[in-house]
Image 1 (cartoon, rainbow, N blue to C red):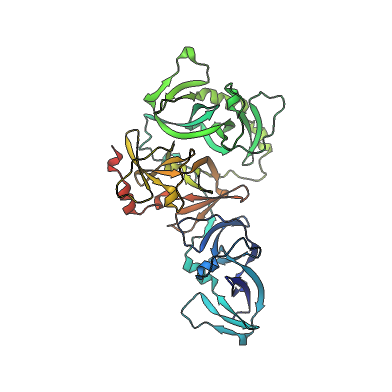
Image 2: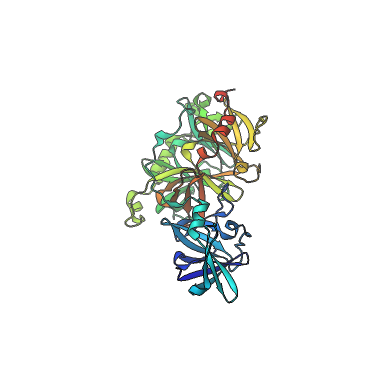
Length: 469
């Protein structure tokens, strides 16, 4: 027999749950929606430093959707099989101790209703919150322990020995490229960079990245251009050699792609300035200057922080964490991530040739260096509206031995993620297998499991014959 219930209001109706099953009552916080899920599953949020799934009780009972902007809106956390969930309600009314004569158990087959409690002329439906969560079948997310990253697991069937992968970027409108093997990650330019007195003009200062201090260099100034103007398109390229790192500030990241080695022309010895090693002309005739790995390694050697300095700012007692690398991209106002092992390259948007009788989310096909690749609007596949802009990119991904390009609004950064920033789904069939939390929980990013995007039939329909022209 229930001893007390927590009463709350949903779409004008009074509902209640066993108060012992209510862990916390919290003000509404921001929710990151999860595409292609049950409508009542509003998304995920960070509660107490953990990822929690949020269920709209109004929608789960076929009532009205809860207006989360109400001042009275609250989240009630509860547990199921040791996992924490939260339900969204319009207003919490308080705890009521049960008088047995006013309680009537439910005789209905509806397992979501435990019974009814009548008090002061009001009838409160008492719901079984555990039954609701089981019926929703929402995968819980728990802290992940990342296995050691194995670069050898990447699909090398396309990027073979006759290809090299480069990151292309702009400095003062000029196109440059860096061998991707020397790049550790790409990050946004932080608001605060601590200047270093009496340093060279191209040394911007020091930044903190995951509890480590890294020197930041303005690559545009280093190459003799006007100083970089820090805008929302500016990025830091973290380069690494023998565990030593520096950050290079550039104006704009273009794309990452494989280049046939035969298309790369070495700069003649008498023209070399030790900074540019070779050049590449793209399909549009634009020339990119490929920066010498030798000069980049020299920058790392000259400007990395000494190990002793590094140790001074390490958090006491922390252990080295395992990491995974992800590509973070945006669709509409949301951010998503894909494991970099699934991403072969990132290219600029180009018009696709339509495919007859294809689903609406299929944009068409493109010819990428003699290989025909189907292009899917990831925006539409995930339930968003397709929007082509000058930042639109195509992610060329490997899915079950097929190569598929995904249209996304923009590629934000490439990040190495520590295991304590990851929460993994306990459901094996979930489309979003992990959730990344950054900036003390202020930034929540859904990690997409690309091989769950299509059914076997859909994938068969997308396959090109051997992916050849």
